[in-house]
Amino acid sequence: MPSADHVFQSVVQAIESLSGDWAITHPLTPETQLIGDLAIKSLDLVVLASSMVKRYGPIPFDRLYARMEDAPPKERDLTIAEFVEFVRRNAPRRTPATNAQG
Amino acid sequence: MPKAEIPNGTALHYQQVGAGPDIVMVHGLGGNLATWHLKIAPMLWDRYRILTYDLRGHGYSDLTPDGYTCTNLATDLKLLLDYLGVERADIVGHSYGADIALYFAYLYPERVRHVVLIEAMVPALVPTITRAQFERADWAATVLEKMGIPIPDDRRYDAEYMLREVMKHPIRWGPLKDMPARWTTDHMIELYGATTILKDALDIGALTTDQLETIRVPVHLVYDRGSTLWRQAYRHLNRSLPNVTSTLLPTGSKEIAHFSPLEKPEAITEQILFAITQHGKARPRSAPAGRLSRTTHRSA
Image (cartoon, rainbow over all chains, first blue to last red; front, top):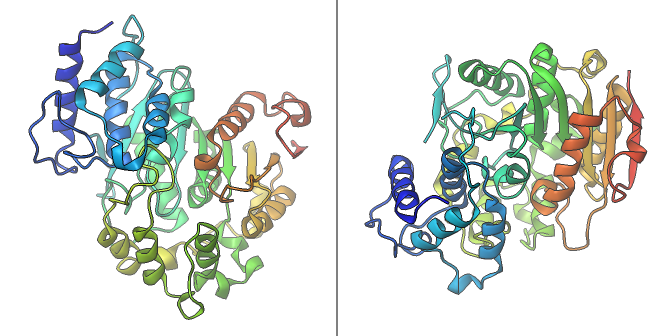
């Protein structure tokens, strides 16, 4: 299982690499909320998820999306720490050799 | 984020995830690559390398003033595959993305293993549903009414009005379901109002109805039983394509027909797997799960 710090750094790096298209003005900390603070769109979230799959191997992000969908819209959000924890718990034990690009 | 600047100067945002044989997924008008990532890609990326991309004018790809015909967009796809070094792939498309997938199979058959067309219309078949009706966006008003967005009679042919109404409506699918749409209305208004996309979408190019029978690559058609407008194209393609299998999926009472990759992604994934692993090997009637309502097979 990758360490929380390792995944957190990967997430921050991934979000920063998206910032040319996704306007991010909020500081990135574990408590930062993807919806409330960063105004994430579905497209941004799946791009972020894809960057985690490329780094850590297949992760069932559809389960994360379904969990979010079940929460009442007014209460729905996801902190970076929660996103990191989902990646840690669901990443394959061994990072696979992937031929993914980009 | 990864973008390919293809030789015609357009930058296309893409995602390539997983390992295994290549599957390319092409979204429809007004969508973006998230269509595939909410459920379908995660169900496949442990066995396949999935390539999704935003069509020009969509998502994070460049918005160009023109170049939105099926022929242009199939060429964009060819250039993207060249850029990524993908020699041959299974191509899956939804709605206008399915039209593009069929044009790609017609123009570049050597690059295609199988094609899965989900709710294709194909410009050459638009006259079968009356060209005027299609151009005046009346079909869009019908779809929106099914989504719970009423369109007054005097606005049924007003594409900008309808777009603005859609933007007011909460998101229907995915992790932001029932939340306000954050996608910029201005971007969509620019795409539909300031580009040639609506005119281009009707451009037949070289793929006339009599050319359909020349497409020899295996094609699997997947349509909603409740998708009345698009099913006219289903019937025609089923008759015309020489190497075709097909499935009509039942439409649930709460579903919006035509949007099956979002409404029933599990069934669509099942159909994709059938098409790319079983086409030509088994009679489809017995191949995929029993949720299929009707399947025909006329493999060449």
